[in-house]
Image 1 (tube, rainbow, N blue to C red):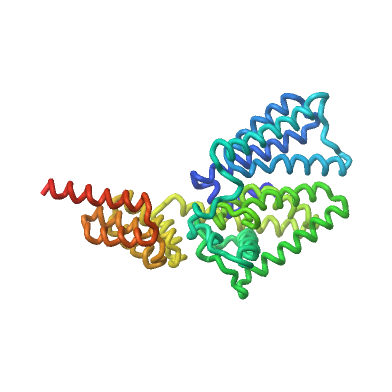
Image 2: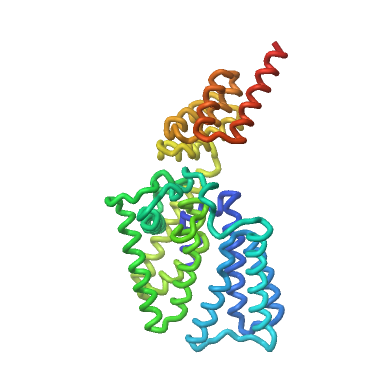
Length: 383
């Protein structure tokens, strides 16, 4: 299960990207804390180290808020398994206090200091990355099954990896979408296996499945809407519990072991191929954009890269693709205007800024207008 976790291609985004570092730190903190709780005897130094790991995890990602639930589940599972966690005279109460203080501190920080709530205010969500913002009625509650189906498909067959899956999911449930039915089937199977593990008192398997459900809950968009509808990097921590659970469920035969080794080898080759693409940003963005021509956000990524590398002709090509892919996406018009300003095509840039302003007037559009006027003034002076 460790090798499977290490080589799985779906973890590439979390490991290869800077913004995926939060996933790595959160997973390291939470898993390290669990390992320390399984010490032969948990003493005060163990509790201090658990506190440090939890602070790292909580400071990296809100996943760590759920550690108190995972710790409780682990305590119950080990007790029922007749191998209870062992604490010295003070460490048990101290550990409970530490977990409660860290969890409560983050909640207070979010709600009272930063003014944030659990779940994003839909007003601030970008529908291009979170189409659920536009979902109403049954679509809002059924789309999480489609999301689950897509996650399962990528874990089992990691071929269509991408930085952005939102346009493929959309905001309406398609009755003919196989991912929707795969998600429902997965939900039923998971529920059945969890009940089986409970009834058979297989408590280690129950802990793994329970932790998988706890960590997946936050990214599922089922009850709480998060900033994105789908992200490969978000599976980094849930799969840390999924793969050991799958291995525990597999028969311990030589044939199964050989099959697992073959799967690991295939995943490793796919990971090496996909990770290598991240080393050449231009070709990587172009590859993703060609694979999803309807995705304006991927075209904007390529546009941004070519703007930064001063390849303005290629930037214009990708900006045009972005505006054609989604003419209602105001960001696409602003990036296209940026390219035209750098090329000195001020009238075209003005037209694009006005289109963006009609789509979503605001501070950003005003900033682009001011930038355009400053460039025009500078050009007139130089002439």
